[in-house]
Amino acid sequence: MDPAAAKLIGAGLASIALVGAGIGIGTIFGNYLQGALRNPSAAPSQFANLLLGFALAEATGLFGLVVALIILFVF
Amino acid sequence: MIAAAYAAEDAGHGGGSEGGLPNPMHQFEIKRLIPFELFGVDVSFTNSALFMVIAASVITLFTVYAMHSRALVPSRLQSVAEISYQFIANMVRDNVGTAGMQYFPFIFTLFMFVLALNMLGMVPYSFTVTSHIIVTFALAAFIFLGVTLIGFIKHGWKFFKFFVPSGVPMVMLPLLVVIEVISYLTRPLSLSVRLFANMMAGHTMLKVFGAFVVALGFFGGWAPLAFMVAFTGLEILVAFLQAYVFAILTCIYLNDALHLHH
Image (cartoon, rainbow over the protein chains, first blue to last red):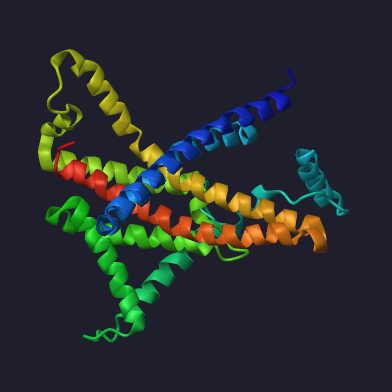
């Protein structure tokens, strides 16, 4: 297979990792909303944990994106 | 097809004729502003260095000027400085405890520096320093080494107890310790890649959609323009959020080193 074509296919496959990021971020925010609607007074205290959890979940998806970019631009 | 459009642009630059879409990766290019060599090592003053100097100057000028009157009832600008101090002080106190407050100046500097670098990148035609993995890796590596060193200085060889969680059956211990050590060693990697990937992906998307605005012309260009306005707002939020996450994870790692419980 032509290496340039293989690079493009590899980058596309590596980007599938962002599905996990989407699911993770949706789960975190969904659970926060569920808890906040049950107990609104406790919501502000957990806002910091919400942001932290969002960043950590997005990070793993972005690791997959970084692999895609490495495949495209380094090799 | 899109790769051909980017290639046509690169070829167009060489020939000076009509090109395709502009390359979104050109914005990350390092340019030497003042070439300088020391013992064969290239230590030129680059655009990256320039923006680090600008960020440090902006932070220093802001905090010094905002607090220069030291009013008991703060003015608006003094309130901003006090709020940012309080925000980080609360974060350090909540995550590291009172023992960690001696590291507050470092955490505050780290947060303000990363925040300023991220925000300066949102200025049009500027350069995003944190969109280079070497910059974020240098920050994360020093944080990791510093925190590990603090752990060893405070606890001596007992620091290795950190990798042995309590209440684990003896059978699982060898595997679990290996997993713990590997996940500890990936901390600087995840810390640096998180910031780098967010910044680079965000700015690449901004450039790509900007190219669409121009390419679709007067009648089609309003749709990507509306998206760009919303996405720029998101990028400003991400710039703040990533600086906050970088600082809070540093606090959490510091807490692990100072108080060795999982």
